[in-house]
Image (tube, rainbow, N blue to C red; front, side):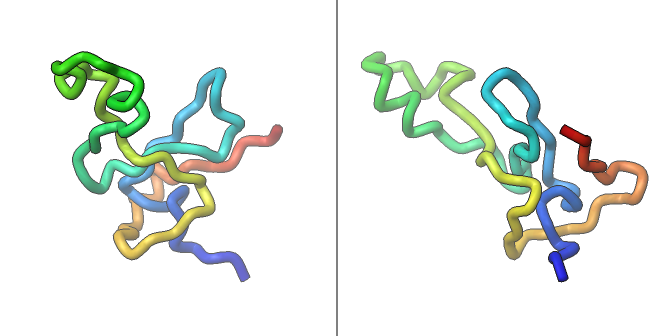
Length: 83
């Protein structure tokens, strides 16, 4: 039986769609954004951490689980889309 405590059903999950996503992906907004290590390593600017692109929320899959799960209200549950 699949878990009902997945990111897809968590109030901290925000679905992300775009050209570089294949569906079923999103970000976890349980905690503040973190410094993106890839951005910092690719940037040689001493002010890299002050650029908006340097910060990001952790990427997650809709089927991921963690210990921070909190049920979202029924009106905001993301329903899977047919591909």
